[in-house]
Image (cartoon, rainbow, N blue to C red; front, side, top):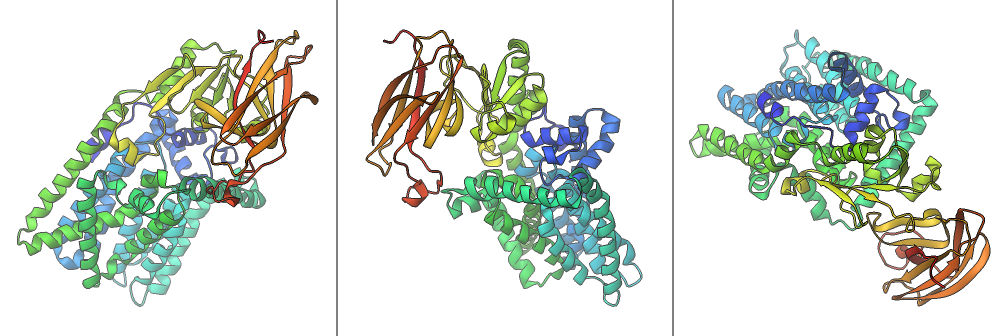
Length: 594
């Protein structure tokens, strides 16, 4: 296990969440996404402790993840062996070791196990809690105290590392206490809940203080609910079929079909065997995994499904080991469990090798791009940064002035009128002169990650092509790196820079796609509130209007007022609830045109 983690150590930061956790260790400020909601207070506390030794937050978090894998493996072996004990000492040992290896060497854990994230420590505490629950279930009436204390403390610690787990951990804790020793069940529950409360206070009070007390905490929770609704349960699922979502959560964490299908088939056989044998000791892990998986399937972002599914993989790995043991015994070759598990693990390693090999030997593309900017771009230049790369830019390029590419954020940052010089984008760019940094494409990247940060581009922005969205102008589509159009609302405006010497003009091209439910849209254009013309934009076509830029000022506000508009969701054109009028397809300044 140690070799598997040490050989997969990342060469640099990669995911944006890693940077948010690093910043949280440097200064715990969850209100300003250091780290992001819900705050991960115990993870930050453990990271701060290790940082006293490493003096590098990234190294401290990576070390915490590696240590968590080693402790978690030992705890999971103990938990699985006790849960499988009715099968006999030798079969239970085989099930425990095979199941723990399947989990910790699964494609999901091979990729995320060594990273500076909250998942490995949270999984470690889940494994410790499950081991404590199994010990409590088998404890003699005189030996229940320590299992009860550790069950409560470790269950709380898992929530402290990943507060989202509370939805699954609390029912698991209730079931585990219900299975406590007869005659001592009430006392064991009281002690376990006391330990849970005491540990929770240790990590909750610093979080409460950081967010400004009880009133600030309620606002903080509301903000977290809004983020979940926007980034997990709404936009990412738009148009996604249920089968696709299920595949993301159930199959992709186990890699390609030649490994995921056997694991899931063995797990199904194992679940049937556990149910037929009434193995009630497996009830806590079953409750934990079923609730966590169900919540993920119904609510969470399918593109980040592998990380969200990690707690449920504990149950899948155990059930798969039980199924493998059952089939091997029926075939009268009990030792066949070992080559079967070894074959699956070899498949996991071979599958993830293309991603792990490049990640362990080279900087991630965001880090490569940041290093290039430091070498090649003067500090007085302004960067416009796409949303997914904002944490990287804020941490790695803190000396540069930065503008968020998302129009909805530009007002908040009060920098919407600043003209950028370079675009830092998550993907390939069509802007001329763009520089690209990339890792090779691979199937594990598509199945096991959110699909970001394989390609990062730095694009110089031509001064005569850039404009500032001021009002009613939505994000560039399909992206700012490949800007073909921006939808505008019925009352929209942009800001355009000029030399202010007079005689300059701007050519504005507006369009309306074929699928729009309007025959045409009349648009009135003004420049600094002075009439500049009117055009009729037909469905399926585009029109260009040339407007003068006023003299005596280096910035002009161009407004578009459309006489007709529509909401796609109200006309059967998908889930888009924006009110749209026309597309702004091109903006060009050309002083030579008559």
